[in-house]
Image (cartoon, rainbow, N blue to C red; front, side, top):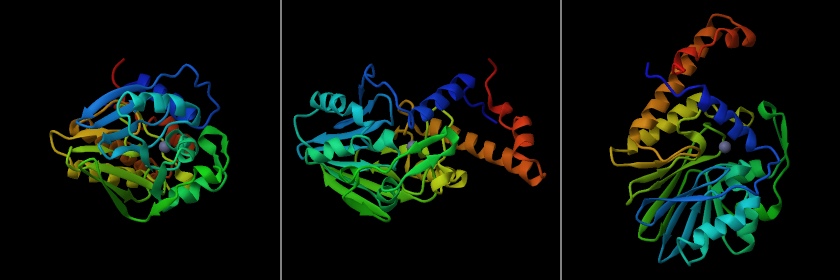
Length: 279
Ligand SMILES: [Zn+2]
């Protein structure tokens, strides 16, 4: 099996996902802007990667970072476009992807997401893996347009096609395909170079993660640019390696479960050890 990145990446992934649910000092965070294709950009800071479509019709965002970063987000966007942010599409409910909803919504942006994003944002959560309580979002932060399967924006000369992938990172994930530009924003069904977090408390599931990533692989070719939920911009090759890694971990753990091992015994058996690069 191809070796997946090392402990360094594992540590980074844990810090990053824990950050999603902790009260962080975000004052030092800078948002980096990267052009992905004509009229399409990725902004990366502390939370999930933000996708940007900018053109004559205005700005469409895929996700909107933590709430305290909205001013920096708006500043970064002003370097790309002088047009208003007309829509935000949330790929899922986590606050490192939806934190800017309230601030942008008050400026007139319409928030769009899968039905279950609104549902999960509307209630309190306890995320055991981070030992963190996440309070329900205020009404003003909730998506005002929701869909159950797919939605397409016809703006900026693009078809921006968002489609739901069931029971993956959460129960409300969307993958976003910028059809003409051959760009995909995966949300958190794909962490590039990082081990992912799966929110099993709301129906996330490793099989769904793999199935979702395979759907992206099926619509990608050698030229496709893939914006992951976290990590650097990717191509099809890196995504294929990630699917192989996830499948390998799932199968290794499933074998231990089938052998009747307890959770502690399964962890002690280090089922992912063969994935770690030699350090
Ligand atoms: Zn997430």
